[in-house]
Length: 231
Length: 230
Figure 1 (tube, rainbow over the protein chains, first blue to last red):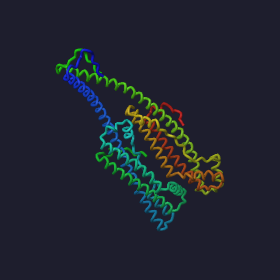
Figure 2: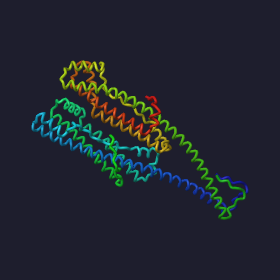
Figure 3: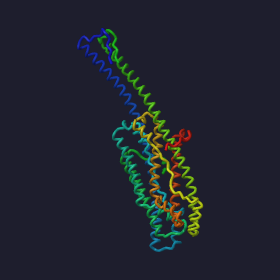
Figure 4: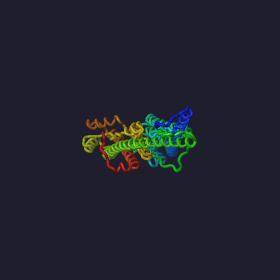
């Protein structure tokens, strides 16, 4: 708004042009200053959001690495037991011999104990919720989005996949039968083979996920000093 | 706003600069005032959204505790039953005796099922939808986001665990078989063991969820439970 009192006259085109120019320049300056301050805030918000997202991705990578190590160890251990049971079933070994082999290869009892990390995503959720995602460079934002999409897809797939290759009640029944000492080695072989399948699927899915994350954000490595994976 | 005093002419660069500076400052003042008013609105929106989110989380926490206690009670009873059934199967106790003992232990009603909390999230959805989340304090927002993510993860894992481990349809058969006096001890042992294991997993998961609430929002946890809204 521009209130011009009496006696101020724009007597010529030159006067008009001067005032016009002055007002345009001053408004542009004020808006520019405001935009500069806002830009500084946005850049700060984007940097904070990026740092939090990257810390979260690093922690997820560390948890993925921990669980890959755990699941692959479970896979190897269960494979040994499965191979031994296969041999015992083929050679019609007695229950006593089978029991002895199980005690040797699984001294603490047969246990699946596969792991899948809780892949955190709240840094991303916060970034979307408080709109700081708008101020992150679009290419970088796309990379982050690819990481979270890969996490989500892998988790959804493994949770769909496991029930199709693994019969939980069958395992529970077989392990319970083993506790009561009344079981068939062939049935146990089937169950242990399924357990191997789960550990193997989880290991490979986590390796695939880690690879996808590294491809999306090659500059990010797992956080040092890995915390115990939660699941 | 630009108020030009009488007889003001832009005859020199100094005049021009004076006017220029005055206009810039007046516009910045106006923008600042507008920003201050907006900030007050945003702070109010953030406070409202924060209060609604905390009320929602408080109700969720109350439901989590309620369901945890119910599951823990059922777990205790089922573990006792499971231990008895394993011993009975091992020692070859006859089916009629086992059924009679189980009926006595369960007072004729063998409940097999999980108690699960309903965890609402619409206050969070609203805060994101109307952008009031942008004005909530960053660390507070992060804590809310963590709890809502924990809730989602809990639900996802419980759905997965029950789909993999629970012998769902056989649970009803056990109850019916017990009432009809036709169920065999081995069948009952397998079903009870499956339920025992699923409830055990659920109790552990509910414990972990409650710990998440304590870690992220200790003031909410110590404020005492609100009554669940459902």
